[in-house]
Length: 409
Ligand code: ADP
Ligand code: MG
Image (cartoon, rainbow, N blue to C red):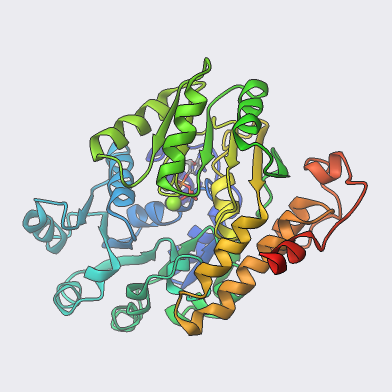
């Protein structure tokens, strides 16, 4: 048995690697720079946690959100790994730096703002690193759906440590974003490892909005188990939670404007519940590990196909049947168009393309899954047999509907 396999059992308690995990881990163990594109829930963390234990030195993990880092540290702690973060929310920073210098950490989590700074780079130069993981690596790319300028400043840190293997990880990168990540982070073309994107247990449905409240109530009445309803605004998430709560199911709101104690209480209630609904903005979901979510509904269009894939990907992580429902209106596209006119001019073309791809998805008469998978560069079958259009092919096609409404808006 190889060492990595032993560690998989003894430290992480898993029987097998999943999907491409082993490929990725073997590359990192061999010291090769790698970009791993793996769907949400595929187990990206293990790809750096295991080499962090197996290789000498500390793994530096760049992560965009304090909440994500703290979740990761909690689960690393539970497995007996020595992990810490250096963020404004950590009072024990001084102690962490000492442990880091003394080589007493397996994993050190930092935000890109800190990682790119001079002081931190000086600190790094005196410490032995096992690897540098760049989590949520799509943030590097302006083509990605969540660009963060600080991610773009990582190159000096990487170039100063050329022999430390880099592992960039993301769930949501289309072809162009992937190419951009490789270039920005200095990872060779052959360093790309892609896992299959298909989530065969998720059934996709797309419907024009037509009395949303009634549509959501019907959905709840016909679907048991925990569900997430993504709302386009904070206000709407509260209103939807109120309206849905009137029935037998409990529904709570979640958005960044809620008091932090209320927010974490609602999240905890949802995570431990077996039939609750959470009506949330997209602030909800990152880093939440709830395998039995049975449906994810969108009360308006998501930001992009990548965002849609990631948000619906929170359903059915246990592999049991789950559903995704998208309720859209032409006005969603009108509003999104207007917002694009407000972004920096040099980003408008890519934003428009993203919106057009999404319009293509909602108005499609063919297989929804095929569209999603093709978007991520896969070559899927024509028909999946598990989406609305495959199960009940539309009789009349009016592909010009959105265009007509946009023009008359
Ligand atoms: P991602 O970051 O890709 O969304 P995570 O790293 O959070 O996914 O892992 C998702 C879940 O899968 C976690 O609960 C993790 O413990 C579990 N997991 C990861 N690898 C394995 C494996 N080889 N066998 C079983 N469960 C695994
Ligand atoms: Mg992750």
